[in-house]
Image 1: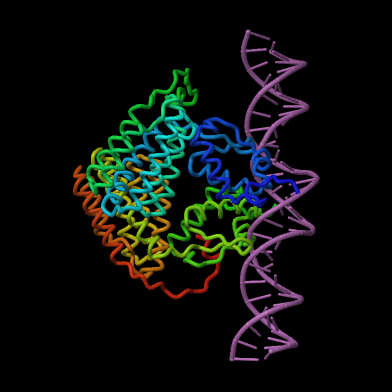
Image 2: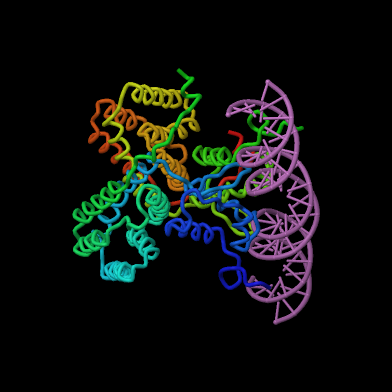
Length: 231
Length: 231
DNA sequence: ATTTGACGTATTGTTGACAAAATGCGTGAT
DNA sequence: ATCACGCATTTTGTCAACAATACGTCAAAT
């Protein structure tokens, strides 16, 4: 029996396939516009097509994949407006997450944050760009996980993946969207129990990331005949 | 060709099937614990099983449905902890929604809110419980729609459906979770451009709904799947 | 040179049959 | 009375083949 599955020769679950695709998006291994063909995905994951279709349906719902009926799927290319919406939502959720965390932090929380920041620093030191991209996104997810709301974590995961697409499209991929210093300061405020400061730092951090994006779409001769004829 | 489809004899899209199931959940026509069998759903919607499976997969991801491998799906029965998480998220999002809306309301927004509240009042006057349940949930979605963030709207829709399950389990189904007066006051604050007040009212409203919940789950009831989805 | 129609290709969508898994029930043993 | 086991039932999961759809390409017509 060919060793084509990923885990003790068991085919991956739909959840695992979703996570692998999301991870590939976050690490820019699957950039916006990449075609996703059911047969190829089924081949890569070692499952049948029927297992791949719900995965694509879900990713489509989350905006990470765009389905073209009878033509196949592709990694989404969020518009500038969608990018703004992502950050608008993150500015509502993430300051509240760190505020909650700061209000009931303990040594276990601090240790996990420290361990994570250490890995970020190590990835930066060895110039491991892909790892750094992944780790900076995971920092935000770790905060949500530590804050203890699973629903919040699930939504943040979606937002984080969308953010990766946005960053790919609107920012140079060689620039990590998150400055490591910001993360260190946020973690320090959490450790001190200073929720208000942690929230301010997170808000400023998100604003800075968004402001670093170039939302102006590339100049195109965008002309819509129907719209032009509408009067 | 048998006229078995729902819309100009065209089979429903996956999106439409999701919406119908969600609507049935919101209106308590599909209470928590209800079994969802692929063959039956395919029969009811007039599609093949392969069309139903991505729908169930997505609803499972959103927590609205629980999948039991090789045994079928069921409408979820959120725990008390999950209920708290839903309200925690809503308290972050919805005050911000109404604040945004109040900052840039106009006559079109006011008219749509007025029209909706009128329909709520009419449903209450004729004692149309199902319509009232639906309309009170739609009020919150309308706010998100008017605020103009599609991503926010999508997430609110999920939260609203989860809230319906929570309310079914932890609150008497004969009591609308939202008091109509609250909605009227929130809309009035929005119309006046008083974002801070609208946000306070929304926060108080959500707290009141949550505080009205009782953690003792209600007894199960038998019913007809096709009938429940007929709406 | 441009437009249109036909055709081929790529890919998804559908179908029916069957395999696999989980659960309930009945029966026999203890 | 309880437990274990075997079997039946229910339901999902898999498979392969084929239908349907969307799009690109190319040739013919204008």
